Image 1 (tube, helix red, strand yellow):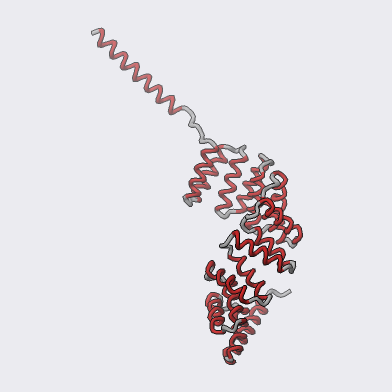
Image 2 (spheres, rainbow, N blue to C red; image 1 turned 180 degrees about the horizontal axis):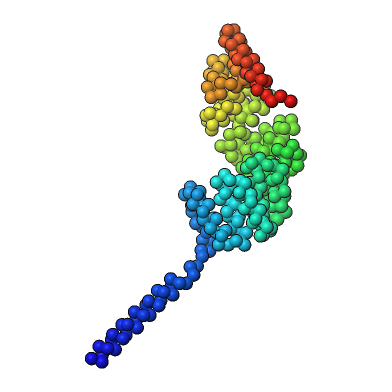
Length: 313
């Protein structure tokens, strides 16, 4: 009898202890995820293409860590990837208020500015980034692009050169340096840079047709033709490749093929006055006077329409 009583007491005590343990667990504050956990989860959602979920996680990170520069930088990166440059800019600026010594945040802020073509606003963050991280080749490249778009060609060239000194195969750097040289009229240096870009970055479309244009303007149609054909392979609907090839074929008197290239352009953009004009010239060479006259008339009509729709001073 006594043994049975002791056993019941023991079972009752064990039950009480278990209940107290559960109650304590339920009443204890839940631990928040670490910043690294948020970063890993956000990256996972981005990799899966779930932008809305990534944004939600990044916003929760900011709530849990309101004094964390990293959390705001993470939020800004997600917002920028989602196409919300205005909100991304605010997040990056808040991050820099909390920690103004992170070069990557200045770089990200510049990306937000450049995404909206705010070149002047991108210069300051890029200079701050390079002050903290002077060997950042991509920052030199972006600063060069901003300078060039602000018509500061010589400083842009220096930035592109610095980028290439730090990273000789940096994608886009030879192209942008070539484009800057071309804007100065230095076509020999320009085409050298375009060909270097093609060598290091063989899928860079613009380098092909720009190099082709220079070769064609120099009277070297045979050198230009493979450049335009490769451009068309890379971007079959790209207008510059087809137009350049049409000019080559016209120069080589392959007029039927030139006509086909120009018609390909006009199928996509029937209001392309330059293509209509070149097609008129091709028809003249072919002796098709009526077709040439029709194309010239189309050119006149398009120019008149443009002049009428232009804003009045």
